Image 1 (tube, rainbow, N blue to C red):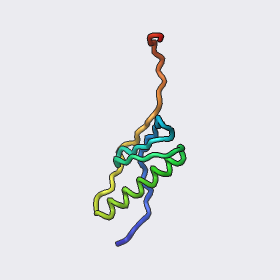
Image 2 (cartoon, rainbow, N blue to C red):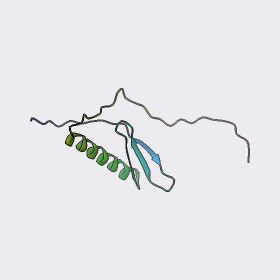
Image 3 (spheres, rainbow, N blue to C red):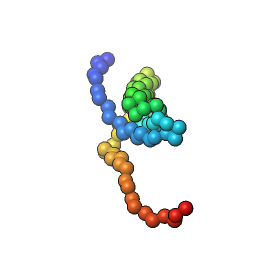
Image 4 (cartoon, one colour):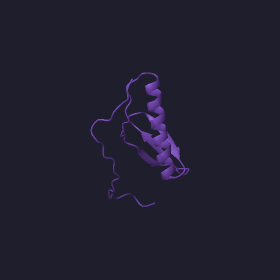
Length: 84
């Protein structure tokens, strides 16, 4: 069987954890991981994706691909709230 290298792209959502560090979700794959720093979280997410894909290939399952590009952004919205 012929093999080729392929670059897969997945949306990763980084969320600051209450206890510090970052939690990372890869919605298309259902992967969740974390890291103490943003860079560590990014490396952990890449590793989680590679391991998940390797498992799919080992079991002969299809590799999910994302649909149209998602844009995830933080929005600031001014609101009036009661004073404490």
